[in-house]
Structure formats: C-alpha cells, structure tokens
Image 1 (cartoon, rainbow, N blue to C red):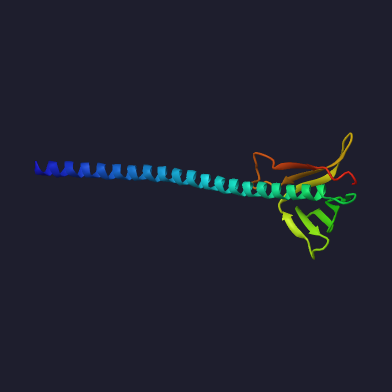
Image 2: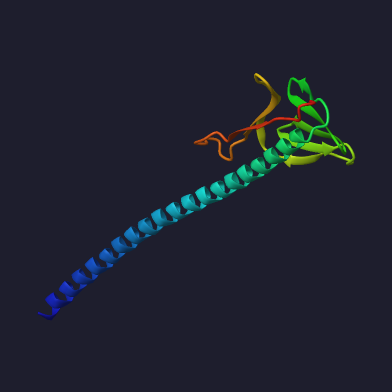
Length: 167
C-alpha cells in the first residue's frame, strides 16, 4: 500500500503542477490583453490631447486673423502662388502679413524683424474674398494635417471676417 500511495501522490503532484502551468499561461494571456488595451487607450488619449491643442491653437490664430481683418485701414491684397499664399492687411501700425508656405501659417508685422510661425502642421489654407450683396467679406479655410494617417475626422475650419467699409 505504501508503494501505491506514493505513485498516487506523484500522479496528483504532476496534475497540480500541470494545472499551475495552465493557470500561469491564462494569467499571462489576460495580463497581455490588459496591457494591450491600456496602451491603446494611452495612445488614443495622447492623440486626443494633440488634437485638442491643435484645435485650440487654430481657433486662437483664426480669431487673431479676424481681428486683423476687422482693423484693416485700407484695401486687403492677396498674392497667390501655386503652392503658397501671401495676404497683406494694412493696419494703423503698418502692415500685417500672413503667409501659407511649406505646410504652415506664418504671421509678420511690418515693424517686426521676422516671420512668426503661428500655425504648424497645415495641410491646406486658402484666404479669399467672399462678395456678398452689400458687403465684401473675407473667408479663410484652413485644414490641419491629421495626427494619424487614418483619421476619423478632417480638422477643417472656416473663419469669416468683414473689414471696415473703406476696404
């Protein structure tokens, strides 16, 4: 009987060890799925944060552009090139210039030394007049480059402003 109980004990010990290995394997799979879900959420949160920053920056620049248009002291002119655009807005302090080149929007005050990048990562930008029945308005359409290659939505903005009646 002693020999049978030893064999039975070894058989039970082997089954327990095998069960332990199965449980560890299942645990590794569950933890792996948990980490994958965590990092996917982390990546989505970072992309959302970047999109929110880009949207905030674009809205601030759009409001600055609208203020510059509303405070124009003369006629506003636009120079269009195949891959860029330059808009001249006369103001009481000289001229305010906006340029779209190389995937970014730059702004310059005529009294300032150089250009300031106000909006990076721009896919398309178009500033043009929007003639209406009694007023001449300006429209700026700007599309940002998406953070991800397969974006679910297009970050596209349209700003409109009406200069003083003299321009």
